[in-house]
Picture 1: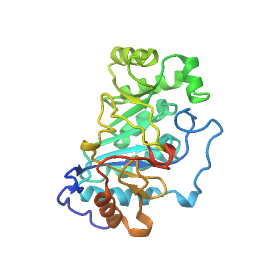
Picture 2: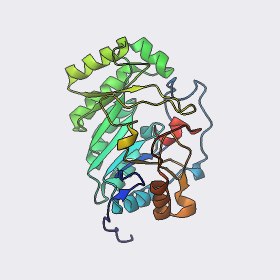
Picture 3: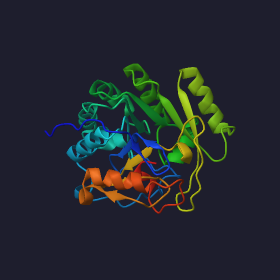
Length: 275
């Protein structure tokens, strides 16, 4: 294995923001069809050869950590549907310099995977939860089982993947009935909650996450690696740089240099770039 590069000066964009956070979409597939993410009938998936291998994801992350990335989050699609996901978690956990290592999941497969994920080196999880009403949950997700998500949350807590944070999508505000039940549940269970207003990539409609830092352009510290090997400097922008065509270092350099001051709009899909 090549020598791990030493951490250099922090990555900084043209607006003085330090870029130290990499979100990695490990798959474009998902076992739910949440109405704000994809249509009920699903979407065409990438071919196997188009999706980054675990070895490619490891090498990209290794190089990024050597350039000052200290926070990594695995996303999807739904990352837990990627075959061998525990092995990938262990591979990335072995990289020096990563201080915050998390994964965002819909929770459906979390009950059985929480213990091995924790053992492999994952620090914590965010779980998507928009309602505590089973029928409403099934409607929003087109068939999801709320019971399995609750079991997954409890398993994550028991495995030490804490603090467990809930991502709750709202239409307008946390004062909505579903959001209030999620907030009460979080307080009772000792969970943290983030409220995310519904966004529209196409028209550039996005908001700062309530209780989190997402969507706050002046403080944005993120790069996104899509599962097909494109490094994106902004969720609400179509700029993307291929690690396969350019090499990892050059793709990172170009993405940081091109990072816009604020988001605008994008033709990309949430399920492919990790939201």
